[in-house]
Length: 200
Image (cartoon, helix red, strand yellow):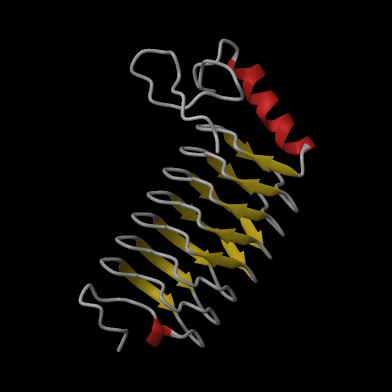
């Protein structure tokens, strides 16, 4: 797992980057450290146990890569592709995704809590036991996926296509749903009420 050591800068709660004593934000040379992080991801197929907190990825490809136990809190992803990407036990909390594509992705036990997703496409993917709690998800195509046991607790979802999805044991409790398409999805097996009652 990535290091839980915090940055040496007073009052900074970010985790250190790649063996240094500072987070990316407080690197002595932020541009160089960011470049190093992007280069590392480009060159490796398996990225494991690293912290990329606060980094910006624009027109970046994660295609075919494996992200395992990485910390990407507060990152910004613009027009990125995660096609055929394996993501396991990663943290994307408080991140922003705009115009990104996940196709054939395999996401397990990962967190996107309190993130913002807009114009994102997640298709033909497995998103198991993952957390979108408190997130704002707008104008997204999330069709043809398996969201088994994932959670959208207290999320805001508007203009979302959830058609042809497996949402067995997925939770939408306390969420605000507006213009959602659940056609051909097993809504009767998802949780929409805090009492435990299934969707009616």
